Image 1 (tube, one colour):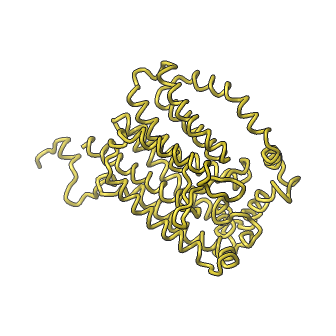
Image 2 (cartoon, rainbow, N blue to C red):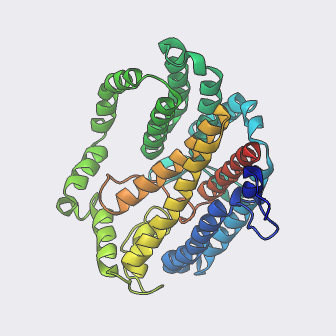
Image 3 (cartoon, rainbow, N blue to C red):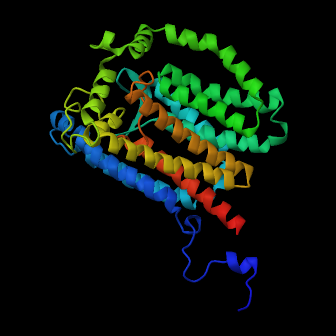
Amino acid sequence: MPSRSAADINRPTRHSPRPAAATPYDLRLLFPVLFLVGIGLVMVYSASSALALKKFGSSYFFLKKQALFALAGLIALVAARHFPYRLWRKLAYPIVAVAFGLLLAVLIGWGHTAGGATRWLRVAGFTFQPAELARIALIIYLAYSMSKKHDRLREFAIGFVPHLIVLATLLVPMILQPDFGSVVILTLLTGIMMFAGGVPLRHLLLSAVALLPAGFYLLVSAEYRIRRLMSFLNPWDYASDEGYQTIHSLMAFGSGGIWGTGIGKGLQKLFYLPEPHTDFIFSVIGEEFGLMGVALTVGLYSLIIARGIAIARQTQDLFGALLAFGLTTALALQVGINMGVALGLLPTKGLTLPFLSYGGTSLVLNMAAIGMLMNIGTVAWKRRR
């Protein structure tokens, strides 16, 4: 029998399955994302039907809108998958400028107010949250800038200051909205991406120390923030106000046990737990699907994050690697903070759970980010071939 060369051994045979990255869509990303979106549609209806019936006269109100968001998100995913990621280099500054302009528009009278904060623009009956776009804009900018200056990132004036200026430009209008959840995510995201890109750790630590007084001032400058922090430490002392959400969220998880109460049978969503279909949808999952549902949800997110990191590691192009890493890190931060809040491990923040929570901006842009990851992964696979 003739011997086979190494090239023959590694060449796929007619019956060999094609690698996930070789298919038009990376199945290791697509399946968990679509699974989460499907779960999200079911849970948005379960969590919001009573509220929708009371406010709008139809229990399907939020479900119908979420289905439209999911369709728009799927279109955004496909479009981003086929948009060459290298072209985002040329759009780095324009997309930051657009994001900043939209953030300003929120503040100068065009913003829509809800829950005591003005964070949205209303267009044709739909609301759009510019902070979600600002997150992707910042990731694209940082990936472009650090890949362009990679030989000089250790220089304070080149590798650190310009990135801090762009970050501050986006953060100021967010602070004025106020939207401290997005402020936290963008700040952490910038620090992590700069560290991964090669900016010296001492520059990041010194800036963190320098910003501590400003952070402390923002924390104590409003009484509700102090009460929110105190309620995080002991929510039962503030059971009627700031600690109310945390207590009822924990009650939802406790009621769920191992297997949950059953879909649609949760009680905390019935006007006890505020925002059950947005910020606290993870709590409803915990009550109706129990520990098994929570484990499944965490597992699906873990698959997405692991695949995103793998794409970043396999990409030889520095811009593509940093872009993939930034998109994955942003998703991981949002997931971690939302789940931490629902479980009482972090102070309350107004952040949605990607792919699951009700909300068009978050769903569409997160699915677009998945499409961008797929495009990066496909190009990286072709180069390895």
